[in-house]
Image 1 (cartoon, rainbow, N blue to C red):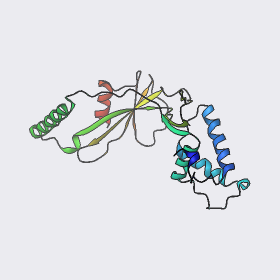
Image 2 (image 1 turned 180 degrees about the vertical axis):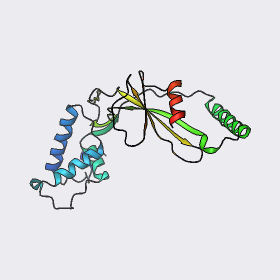
Image 3 (image 1 turned 135 degrees about the vertical axis):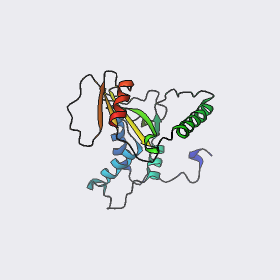
Image 4 (image 1 turned 90 degrees about the horizontal axis):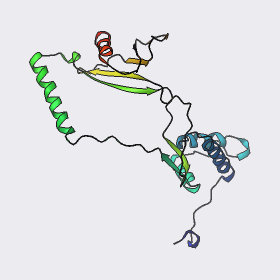
Length: 211
């Protein structure tokens, strides 16, 4: 049945003033291009509930996850995500993985490498500003913008590795610059610099000698 013709049309919001002020806060943040997540909505609701003007007793308002879902549904809000093109894997990728595993096993049997000298390594870019790709926004809104500091493309590269015996190796950080930065390295992280900030043969030598 249409909603207006139902006998039970649902309960009204119990705290309309708080919900109205919460919606004003969300609208203001979104107009400024800031990302809003459901957890932030719940934390802001809890913060507002402590104000005396709403006359809410301590512990009476929980701002649970289910409450947040109902609040967003009533106000036409939805968690939106920025769309990107997914990378397509080659059709024979599973066969290549199996062949690589067999190659590693054969090499270890032939040369008897100890497990602490067999490592699994990967490198990951870390942006200086990592804005969320998801935000609470109005249903049907065509343009979902998120404001940033402009440093989301400025990055460094972190190289992480673990050995076959289960031990974790020291991280290697590659800064995108020509000169070594003046930083206090208190945690024993290996630091290197490259103009493009990527891993190459020279950085690999540093990784083998120092990590």
